[in-house]
Length: 77
Image (cartoon, rainbow, N blue to C red):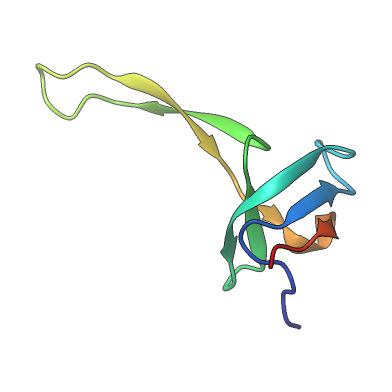
């Protein structure tokens, strides 16, 4: 099945934890049939220091959502 959503499209999430939220598509992962949406589904990742002098840090990452859980609102041209 072909994904009809492209980068920059406005979408609405129709199921899952973020149901009812609106956003813009940041990127499309065609192999997994998932999309990454700006400022939605943000997870925290703890990064360990690589060397003894470095410090670890916490990074916030946008995780992908399956395309069946979103609805296209407005296409970009």
